Amino acid sequence: MKTIEFEIPKGFTVKETNSEKVILHMIEEPVKEIILSGNLSKEFYRNGDPIPYAYTNDEWEWYGKNRIGCRCAYNNSTDNLNKYGYLYNWYAVNDPRGLASEGWHVPSDEELKVLSGILKKNILFSGYRSNNGNFGSLTYNAYFWSSTEHSSTPAWSLYLSYNSEDVYRFNYVKTNGFSVRCIKD
Image (cartoon, rainbow, N blue to C red; front, side, top):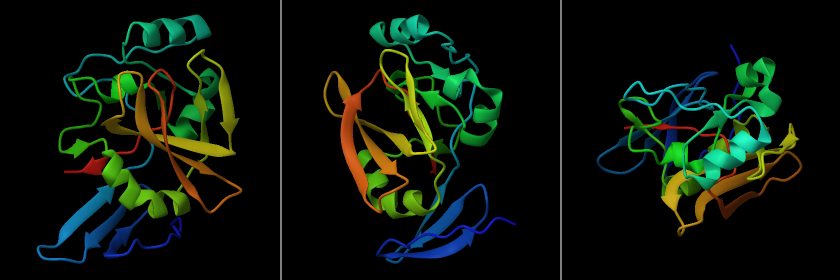
């Protein structure tokens, strides 16, 4: 069994951990349980429609400019997909067909802020895909989308680096490709 080390955020206690998830209880009445998924590797929206795959930089840019959700594996590598999950643009995150499975949701900006300590200790540095389609920072940085829009162009996300204990909150353009984790409803 894989050991997961992380700092427990203030106001929470650990119920269960394993290689796929961390389950926390919020210490307040009533007790609220939080279950956090691993990096998503979904190929279909909740309603069964496929999430388009962007292989080339031109395809990635086209989906972004047309505000259409899409996904990719880092450098289109199956090995990277199996280890890190897909990178999604924000339009896939916010698609009304639902990126998260039934009974789960993409965390809001506020929820990501609460979970940032857990993400830092239970992380795969999965890199990103920029709005022009280039890949970067595999094994060095991780970026996670929230479901919260900042304005018409950016949305809120978290950025973590392998060489820093800090967790950064940024509003990045929605056409970037970041990892997604979900919270059980």
